[in-house]
Length: 131
Image 1 (cartoon, one colour):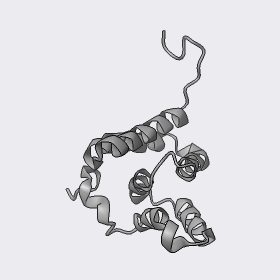
Image 2 (tube, one colour):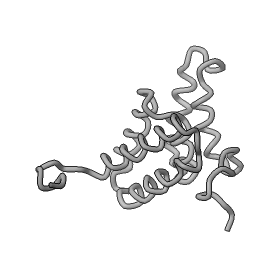
Image 3 (cartoon, one colour):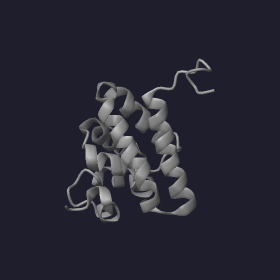
Image 4 (cartoon, one colour):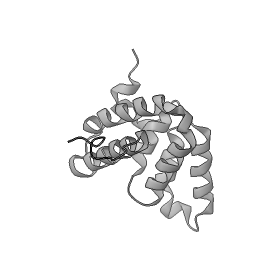
C-alpha cells in the first residue's frame, strides 16, 4: 500500500525535506560530499518543479538550518546553484544579529560564501564541474 492509498498526502516539500535530511545524514556518518551529491541533485530537481513554492522552500531550508537539523553544507550547495538573494539576506541578518559572530558565525559565513563564483567547496562536486 502506497502513501496515496493510505490517504497520506506527500508533498514536494516533504520529499525535499527528506532529501535534505538524507544528505545531512551522509555528511554526518560518512563524511562524504560525493555521496551526498545525489541528494542535492534530487533537491534541485524538486525545486525546479516547485518554483511557485519558493517562499515555502526558503522557509523550510532556513528553519531546518536554524533548528540544527541541517548543517551549512547542504544550504551552501543549493545556494551556490540557485543564488536566491532572500537566503543570502537571511544568512546575513542572522550573522549580524549574533552576539559573537566571530565565535558562532562560521556556518552562516560559509553559506554566504557559497554565493560567490569562486566558492571553495565547489571543486568537490560534479554538479559544478566545468564541462
